[in-house]
Length: 101
Image (cartoon, rainbow, N blue to C red; front, side, top):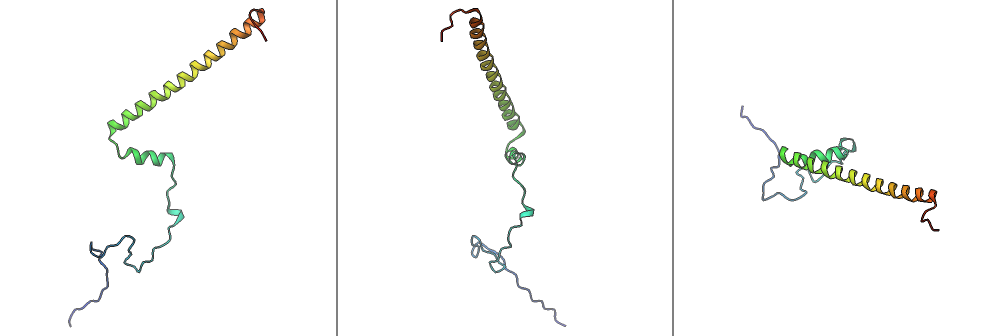
C-alpha cells in the first residue's frame, strides 16, 4: 500500500511575509485581559535593569542614593534656617527690640 499524506501548512518566507500577515486567514485572537502583566514600577525597573550590567546598575544606584541624600539634607537645612529665622524674630518681639508692624 502506498504511503501518502495530505497536509496544508503555510511557511512564511521573506518573499511572502507581510507586516500583520497571519497564515490562519488573517484572524487574530482577541487579547486576553487576564493574561496581561500589570505595569508596576518594579516591572519597569526590572526591564531597564536587565539591559545594564551589574556594575552599571550599582553605579546608578549609588548616584541615585547620593542625590536623594543631598535632597533630604538640603530640605533639612532650609527648614532649620527658616525655623531659626522665625525664632529670632519671635525672640526680638518678646523683648520689644526692632519690631515694626
